[in-house]
Picture 1 (tube, rainbow over the protein chains, first blue to last red):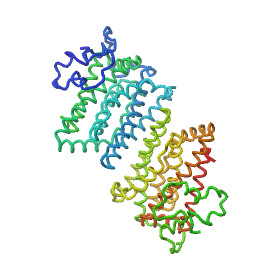
Picture 2: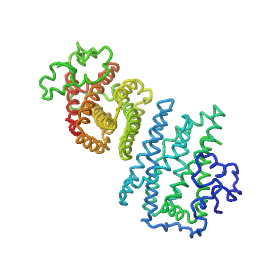
Picture 3: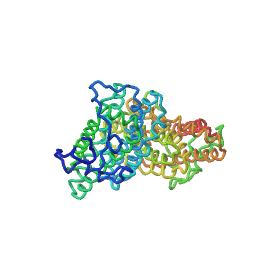
Length: 274
Length: 274
């Protein structure tokens, strides 16, 4: 069961039409050299790798694993880029309340950034140098998912943030205690979303057309997020090793992406996008 | 000594060339119907008013003075508008570190906004309705002081925020304990400015031309801030009454604006703009 993008891994999935294979096609720019039919391990050149023994419930990952700092760095740049997308998207708000809601979400991102800056400094890293390798993938994600309407901006703020948080939380659980604590703390304060849920639910109750558009938009957000995650993993060996170690083995990585897909579907359902 | 904009009140001031009369001329759009030669009390139609007895050190202002909620509301909209100006100005940053510095300052504004939202809600006000009367003046301030360079953005972030904080802190000291505490708390967290000081000092050490431009820019920021403060005070009776009560009398208001001018000069000096 090495296929994550297409293949038999999802044959038993009851949400056949929500398969990652389908969702990813909604994305726009496939990773250069990576066809849509290729599995994630193949795309990453892991075809011949043997699965490791799954990690025990107590972390088997050493505290100084170089992937931990890379995880903090990609999280940190994610916060900065989300801050600027949210504050720019807020210009589309139809009310001052809407502008405030997105500004509050953006401000929370900066609080998380500062925690990560402390954590990276404590590990002896300069945060700006550490973030540099991740700028391109995250900027690409935002450039390829620039909302064209206020409702798209709201769904992106809620769903996009959620996809990233799921991924980091899944990895975070398997990290050594201190690093796990940092990840948990960074992810714990993503509130301010009641406004988004309320606005989206109200809009789609009034318009099936909006609902259809936003359902497609949600798929595209997931597809683009996974495309860029692949890009990052293909480039950063230490981070990739951390993700595999945290997941136990390659099957664990596949299961992780599968859980992310399920959590995404649940989030879409909260917005009424089912 | 009723003149704040021009006149003998500043004759004894050792910084003759830094007079408000001079500074205000650097502003762009005088308040309609208010000539530059007019005193603030005259502009507000207070010419015939008798000074009150100054307030004692224990506040004589009732906790339910309607001006307190207006003060919270103008502070709150100030935070929102500063958030959006800072995050937009950050696009001019030449480095990621610069973008982060302005984003952190913007995020701090939202923390203050949330405190004010709680305070206004506790007083039975809807913050969006309460802010509405102040939108125009604050939007005008930002529209007339849109930075055209990264250095202007930095000076505005530091100096503009400082002018507003001085004003609110001066009024805050005279408020009843609970309201004074809210104002103090809102103003206490304006940090993140070391980056600005360092960047501006470095730039002006390298260029006299930049220094000259930024000195004029600082004057213009003060002039525009006072123009818009006049506009607000001329429109909001309860807030004006609060400012006079907090200052003791009209002479106290004049002294307050004089102290603001001195604090502005000190802040400019910290940046090396003397």
